[in-house]
Image 1 (cartoon, rainbow, N blue to C red):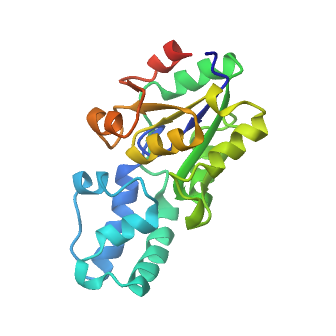
Image 2 (image 1 turned 60 degrees about the horizontal axis):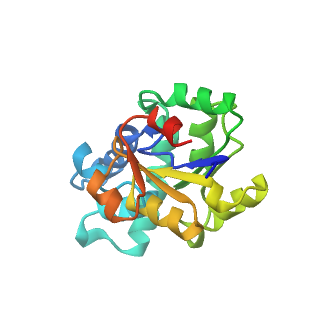
Amino acid sequence: MKYKGIIFDLDGTLVDSLHDISDAMNTVLESLNYPTHSYDTYQYFIGSGLRNLVSKALPATNNSEEQIEICFNLMINEYRKICTLKTKPYNGIIDLLDNLSSQNIKMAVFSNKADELTKKIASELFPDYFDTAIGLSTEALKKPNPFEAIEISKNWNIKPEEILFVGDSDIDMQTALNANMLPVGVSWGYRTEDELKTSGAKIVINNASELIEIL
């Protein structure tokens, strides 16, 4: 199979954004006198969108839909200010993107992060690499819903089975399977290799250059 396109997850795949996300949420929790969490704990909160992360971070006694909505808006306001402060591409990612660009491989980003922030991070850290960067605009389209991934394949005029879906979480692997794309897990993100394989990863790579070998 000759693969012609790659859809990347963002957090935990292209960029290490753990510290900025955690710092923003902890700022909100501190302002409300709620307990904060460690970076290790936030590692398991990431992946299902920031609203879901807010729900997990709030105390069980203060987890109503109203409180989640208030804290989500506060968190977004904080995160917007610092979303590229500590966030950096993982080792080898820029070299990988340069290599893929030289081969005219189509590339896109599909994240469960808010659409505005996905586009901001992608454009600031990876200018000119991606045809599109899509984040979460409505809960109904959140991964593992494959709708946006399939729309990308249509826009590229490339069959889904000719596209790699690269991510670091069970949700990414499920999205790839739902879209009929090849699920490729990365071991440097926020989940373990075993979790990725259990979730459907056909291949798990340990460094960015291994993706070139798949192609």
